[in-house]
Length: 118
Picture 1 (tube, rainbow, N blue to C red):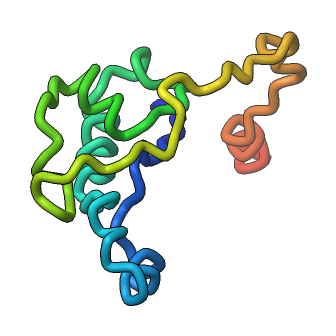
Picture 2 (tube, rainbow, N blue to C red):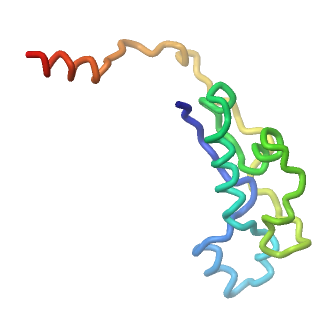
């Protein structure tokens, strides 16, 4: 089991963007279909745990680097457009000095087994 975080590198078409598009239809060129996000999540689920555990990922970068996707045109809402990236290429490292200090561990499954035997 892995714990990962994922964000879109480019704005994703949604109900929120649809409201904006009513007044600014030109914004459609900066959007991608939500399938890019679901494809990236599927790629994460199929990846070995050690490659994705504890990572903060961007959909486009993960698909390109880990899944071999080279052409992102199919994800563009407006074919031929080059959606503007809204996230930095490199996310900040949020590792803290105490990262390896997990403290006292409590195994609730073991405690339940003990209680059941009583």
